[in-house]
Length: 175
Image (tube, rainbow, N blue to C red; front, side):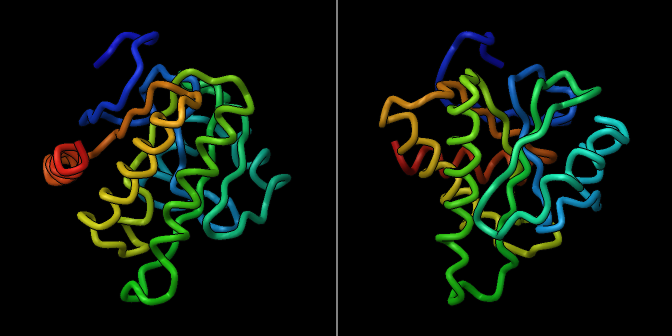
């Protein structure tokens, strides 16, 4: 994994709750309530203060994001991004998914953060196809960096080899 001051995009197979970055992104629901998967892991690792902070920020519409402190996490902040539930691709899912990545990056930029880590938003219980979701995530990240915006270090934190491979394919196909 690159040093904290090195920019660009990286893909790592890691528990996102252990990353030492300025912000990690939570694949959240509109209520910003603790859930399963990545969301549940982040809430457990951050401690009960995260759920309390989320209650004061909720609701958060699909395609957008909110920011809270990271509490007991190594990351200083948690950005709660609400991705779309997959309905076959004809319900504006791609725009909503890209929107939650852009909203997360904008919040990080507003806070002056240098690094951010994303999970594969919407690919769990929300059912978004992994290859399509990773292509959108990588395109949004590359466009953000090409515009010279901060944060300059974007990490895609994945849980398994298939997700890692999907991100690597998406990165290679957009070079």
